[in-house]
Every structure is written in structure tokens, then in C-alpha cells.
Length: 235
Image (cartoon, rainbow, N blue to C red; front, side, top):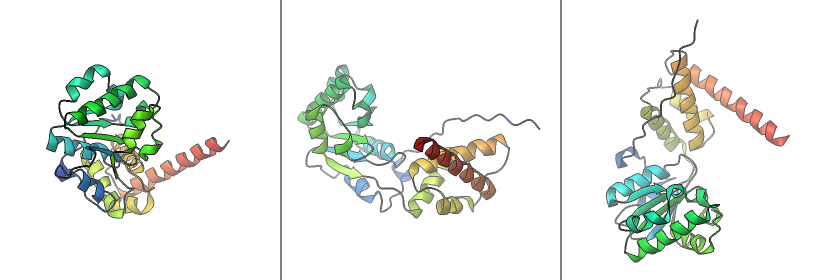
């Protein structure tokens, strides 16, 4: 039997405040990003692992404050005067650790935004002191910001994240799929995203509904690939 062609269409994430589930692992970050909370320095650094919700929370804050959002990699000196007219979110700051021009642009944006009385949010994985920025003045200003950290998920949050990822792809798993995944998968947001993507692809390719046996199969494949990668890395 010929296998059905499947297309890995990008999921459209829901980024509203009502779509963000507050749990102990993220409650402090949610509280700090409340527009009524005044950061002492006028700036905040939001950190957490991949898929933890940094972009989601940044969009929530931007929708409440009218902030502009851009990636650090797209920042340039020419954009600074216009961006500094209001609050700004700069995402994935560690990505420019090796780019002196973009670090200079962020440094000037930081100073101008705060000088004009607006707020600045910067996001990235890992603690700010580990971002490796080579511009000392920028690194010191990043570390002086209020810090909100998103922690790895607990069971309840992981279940909600899985449900949201499935919903973003407009697919409905059988009722026992999410509890099984929560009990057996690696406890990370990145793993959740990978597993949901693989389940979506497999169910489309085989014209099967999203069942627990399919989840068992995908988890087994993911573990085997991880073991092979670990073996290759140790050679």
C-alpha cells in the first residue's frame, strides 16, 4: 500500500493571555510581567528553556503595553531611534553573542528606551551571566535587569503544554495519550514539542487517529535516536 504524503505544516500557536497556564514553575515570571509591576531598573530579563513560554509571555506583555517585538538578530543601529519611542521586547539575545554590531545596537537601544521612560524586556535561554555577550557594558546592563525565570514543567503544566501543542496543530489525541506521555517522556518543553510534531506527522502519514499505541511507538523511536546520538557523541 502506498504511504500517504504528509506535509509538516507549521502550527499556529495561540499566544493570548487566556492561553497561558499559570503553574508554580512560571507563576513568578507571570507576576513580574504584569504591566502594573514596576521593575526598579525599567528592564526585565526573561529566561527559560526552549518552549517554556518566553515568546508567549512576551506577546502577552506586548499586547498589554503596546510594545514592539523583534529578534536580537534582526536589530540594527538604524532601527534604534524608532524602536525607542515605546516599550520594546528583544528576543533571543544570546544569539548575538558573536556579533559586535548587533550588540552595539542593543546597547544603544537599551540606553535610549530607558532614557525616554519606556520599558525593555530581553529574552534568552540560561542565566543572563551565561549569555556570553562580548560587549562588557551591554553584559553588565543585562545582568542588572530584574530577572524572571521560567522553570521546567511539573506534571500538571506538562499536560497543559502537550494539550496546547496538539490544539495548535488542530489535532485531538485519544484521552489516554497525554497521561501516558506525561508519565513516560523526558520532562522538558523541547521534548513535548518534538513528540507532538512526530505524532502529528505519523498519524497523517498512516491515516491513523492519535492513539496510545502510536504514542508508545513515537516515544520508543525518540529514545532510540537519543541513545544513538549519545553514542556518537561519546566516540
